[in-house]
Amino acid sequence: MDQKPGTNSEEPSSVDRPAGLIGAVDNVLRLLRMFEDHEMIRVNQVARDMGLSRSTVHRMLATLSHHHFVAQDEFSRAYKPGPALVDIGLSVVANMDIRALAHGALVRLRDETDETVHLATLRGAEVLYVDSVESNQVVRTGSRTGWTLPAHATAAGKALLAELSEEEFVVRYPSEGLQAPSSRAPQTRDELRKQLTEVRRRGYAINNAESEADVSAVAVVIRDKRGRARAAIATTAPQSRVDDEWIAVAAAATARIAQELGERID
Image 1 (cartoon, rainbow, N blue to C red):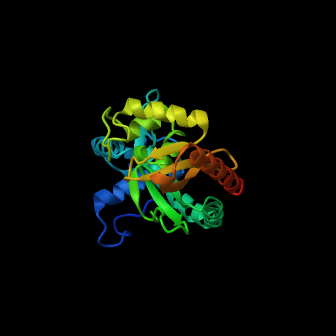
Image 2: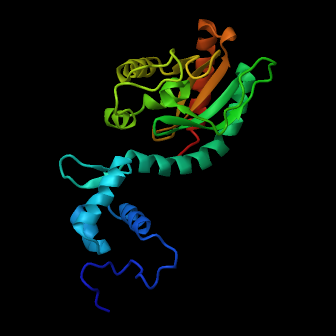
Image 3: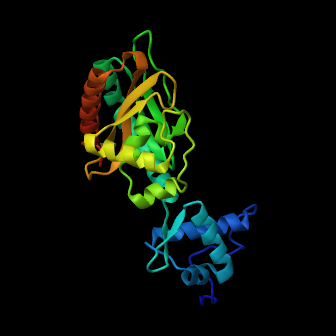
């Protein structure tokens, strides 16, 4: 059967689509699914394949770019998946796989340090805590499972931010000033950059009561078999127990567990 100009034979016609669909949302989702078959897409290509006007496609891509779901290549001017789209895909898969794999490792780390430990992933400029194992001590830090906190004010967040390229970093922090939950957290993007340089140098991140009063932590990224940062493990304690010796011991134990866990992740 001949295909009409400006339509995609693989896309369902309006007759085939179920009632109740929102046309604009349907078009955006169809556009995003084009990345299943193409590393980059162009305005003319989208307009042709979806049967839309160039002006409509421009507006769709501008909106998606504003929310970081697509990014425009500065040389080719074509569009590629943006950090937000990549983060969502990776987070869904990572959270399903890593939490199941990591729980036993978190228990071992808790038993070794006798402190509360957390597993966290990066979501934009925030960290999402996907699992926690609490210390058995009477005075301890609590579970954060399900919490989101500013990445730049947590050890797990800074460990993961240190893995980003400069382009990815600026997307998450487009302004020089940062909204900090306390005066101890980085107040500017430049201050955060300096802290991340130090994280890369020593191999772990520190939170010195930056997101919660009287709670300190160290964190190390979990790298899979291909060296990609997939999540971070943080060991936390009441600040009254934290000194240089505690940091050294906790960081070493956390790094060892993170490495052992990463060797099991494809």
